[in-house]
Structures are given as C-alpha cells and as structure tokens.
Image (cartoon, rainbow, N blue to C red):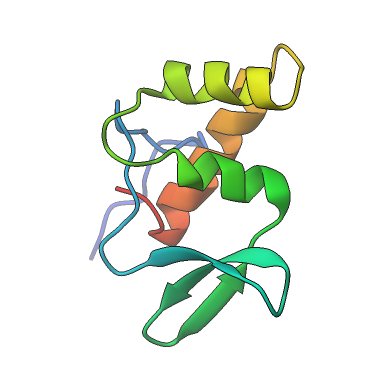
Length: 97
C-alpha cells in the first residue's frame, strides 16, 4: 500500500538548464507551417510561443536566459511565470529533462 502524497502543489521542479528529452526531436514542418515535437509514437504540433521556449532548451541556457531571450524576441516584459508554466508542463509530459 502506498502512502498518499501530501504535496498539494502542482509545480514540478525544473532543471537549472532544461534540455529536450532524447526521446523527442524538435523540427519545423513546412507542410504544417509549424514547429513539432517528433517522438516514436507520433508528434505534437506546437504553438509559436511553446516552440520558441523549447527551441532554447539545449541544456546550456538557464531559465533566466531563456526568459530574457524571449522578452527580447516578443518585445515584452514579465513573461517569466508563463515560461515557467510551459516548462513545468513540458517536464510533466517528459519533453524536457
């Protein structure tokens, strides 16, 4: 019998320098005019912001650097919470390590 988890937080611990899991390959699909994550059983089509976040997950950039890059790219400020939320969902789905 397993004890119930007392952690009620939905946050997943993020790596300091996230990188794409070896099971996935990120590529641009010309036919769909979209970035996709390919994996052995299929693919996931990404929206622009998700693709830009995952394109920066190379194991070299810190989360802070990824946020700074995206704030420049999208000419905005204060997007760290949204970037972290996307990275947490990516961890839950096994897209990044």
